[in-house]
Image (cartoon, rainbow, N blue to C red; front, side):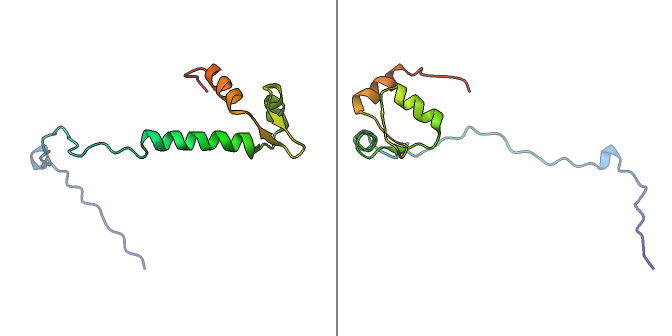
Length: 103
């Protein structure tokens, strides 16, 4: 045998409704100094190492279309799909890129 519960048919009147008192909104203030993950020297070091890796070790590219783009840009592409590009050449290409774009 199953039991069912009946809902109360009594309705609450507007006088019985109690609102929860809201706290005043306050302007948040960060008391701590901003932290920088890396300083300028560390960022420059990482940038230079990444350029050296692209020059000397290269990066393996799997897509044929992307390999052709690198070849047209003057990068060295070997038979294994490893692309190497000179630092100056890469920086020239980057300088031509727009600052912003929409995907």
